[in-house]
Length: 113
Image (cartoon, rainbow, N blue to C red; front, side):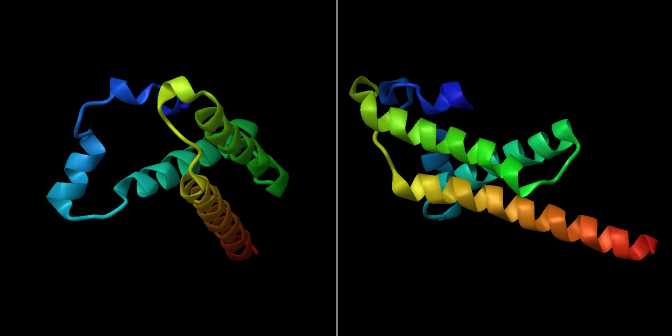
């Protein structure tokens, strides 16, 4: 994921797959949903890896997200830029997963008692 987010823009076709899907399904900003999903998946994988669900653990994907956006802004030869909306989409995915997993675990614990 880190590698893909730092690829120079000219490595992508004129009409990327995401843009083609946006046109086909008439969905605006599908790339933001992809950002949300990728960072949500990263959060799930972290929870599964460490076998804990802790608010402090979600700092890791957020810092990675922030670092990627900063690098895109600094490394101008990539022809990419810092995008605050991408950062918010990433944070949304992280937050949604945290809330859903926390709710699920609390509900499961209540069912067991």
